[in-house]
Image (cartoon, rainbow, N blue to C red):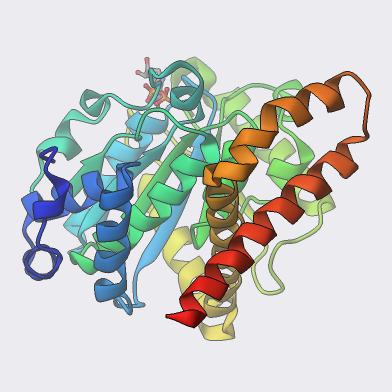
Length: 342
Ligand code: GDP
């Protein structure tokens, strides 16, 4: 994206993107990833223009610890997906990039074959910003990819706790990849994460690891049975796969399509997307309010002194917050008054 963001013609970009231009899609994603105010406005206009994208898409969240085999699995799965006539976008949400500015998932060469395939669009995680910010940009990127005709979107994340919740909150189906270890491994995964799982796959079920992978899948199936179910119609499935030997990959894809059918027929898929859209609305409201709050000159002037007083125990945090919010609302009202007189 050029620094002269104001020159982006949103109408032209939208038309090119819907027409299938990968360059337009890449430019549009760069626009939604930008934190500059002018770009954010253009991104909002673009997304509004593209709203109402086709609903018959499948959004798959895939998570797992570093080294569990995510990229190898996605390469193998992606191959089946595109061979079945679909178009696939692979996006990454990488919380490590928020912390370090570097990224575990960022490198495109992790999926060399998919990255070369014209039916596939691979986009590494935006670097920098909070996990919330990265999640927001990924949601918007999903919308852009779907508008560009990608009917299957994989959102990959490194399993570290919070990022699974973020990804499960923006996809139809949440897949957790597990290493072929014993029950001890399973216990390392937080209960809250296990409760999100629609499909658990134990990777590397080949050679010496085949037997322990089978045991891990059985343990996982037991654990899933004991947990609160996320869906009324779908019972989470645990299975094994080997991306290197190509076993269990077609079966995993078939399970994902079964899931989509069951959930679509019962109306749960639509309900889940509606709930996600509502949650997205509220997170946008809080983010936008907070942005304006922090940008308010009176709040900015007052903040350092108030922070200090709260740190010193001079006034309670709640009282400090109340004072700042009251000041912010005064500014808002004064602005509204000026607008009204015009
Ligand atoms: P990621 O960090 O989760 O994306 O993991 P990778 O896909 O990069 O894989 C990590 C390591 O596990 C690599 O050395 C892979 O070759 C290996 N690996 C991945 N899938 C399999 C598999 O199905 N079987 C075996 N034996 N090794 C695998």
